[in-house]
Amino acid sequence: METKLLQNNLLELIRRTSAELPADVVQAIERGARKETKDSTASYALDVIRDNIVLAKDASQPICQDTGTVIVYADLPSWCDERTFVGAFEKATAQATKKGYLRQNSVDSVTGRNSGNNLGPGSPSFHIHQGRGKSLRVRLILKGGGCENVSCQYSLPDTRLDAGRDLDGVYKCLMDATFQAQGKGCGPGILGVCIGGDRGAGYLAAKEALFRTLGDVNEDKALARLEKRVLSDGNNLGIGPMGFGGATTLLGVKITHRNRVPASFFVSVAYMCWAFRRQGFMLSESGKITRWLY
Image 1 (tube, rainbow, N blue to C red):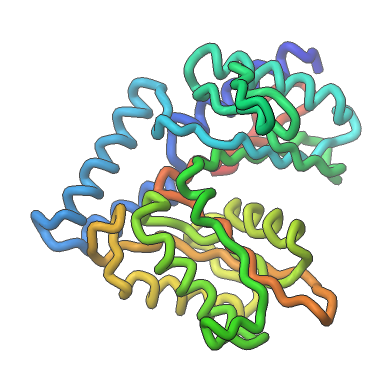
Image 2: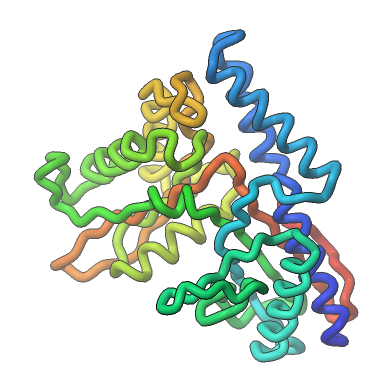
């Protein structure tokens, strides 16, 4: 495939991710809006969110002014090497920034200087694996700073929460994470969760869990029950959209797990805001997008 064609496809992926929420997220927001009391602050907040979704799509403009960290997961087939993919994605990122699909969001942590094109060490954040099929699979999340700031990690046992090293302890962590986020994470939010792993692997897996659709059911029955419990109880906390109160605090809870060493038991929480910018595609060697993933 020509590198320019790959770059153009990746630019369209970035544009669509920035401007258009996936159908499952829109549907969850609509369900939440129907649960709120008419003329309440929560109802008004969700109405503004719904209007924002429509306007952003119609104008092909970012849903949120904070277009966040560009997080890329790619499964490469034999015909696409890592260097080619990264180079094409970086060029697409710079082009998307110039066009206004992405805000100038990459800042040097030492000098404070903004790169102006969203490129720099660790920006974008690439997670690349060797794929098994003939198609290139690319998944993208744009994760804003507000929701990233309220993401968190627990080490069990946690005496503050009276949380032990079991699923009930995990439940207490997730309820605490939801309560602590309040409106600071631009709720209603989605929890991506990893039980176990080391500190770094736990956060990576928690973010990858956000690629699951909101309506799916966890293959692990114990985790499926936990997801359902946290979603129900989280929405009964009364925090509501943007922390204004109401019945819609969480839109989804997605939990995965990783093996751990006996000495450690981490619970990593990747909180995602209502502007759940998640998209992906399957790309053939000829350069045709054969399927959008969300």
